[in-house]
Amino acid sequence: MLAPPPRTAGGRRIYGSNDLRMLVFIRRARELGFSLDDIRALLRLGGPEKASCREVRAIAAHHLEDIRAKLGDLTKLERLLARTVARCSGKVAPECPVLDILDIQRSK
Image (cartoon, rainbow, N blue to C red):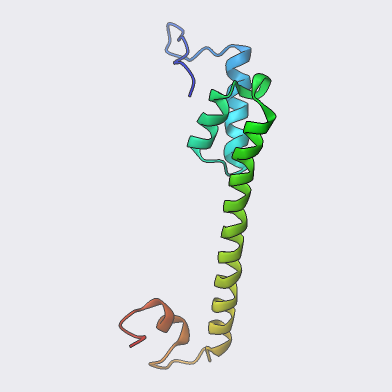
């Protein structure tokens, strides 16, 4: 996403203030869960200084939809696992509800 930075004689990378700003921007976007493709798109729009808010909003809105879908999936997963764990006696037995949902051979 950035041009390769120049290096010192010892091989250390030398970053300018703009490069550091972009690196922080990329790291923060990753922390917020944006994909590398989304980050590239944001940078193509001109980066944190020049991007159109409308275009950035569209990328962020799509990302928000993805997050909400994942939250819905996680909620369903939590309910399924909670019900399954509640059915588990914890005793040594050939039947275990948790293993039954994990192992296709056991669930037959």
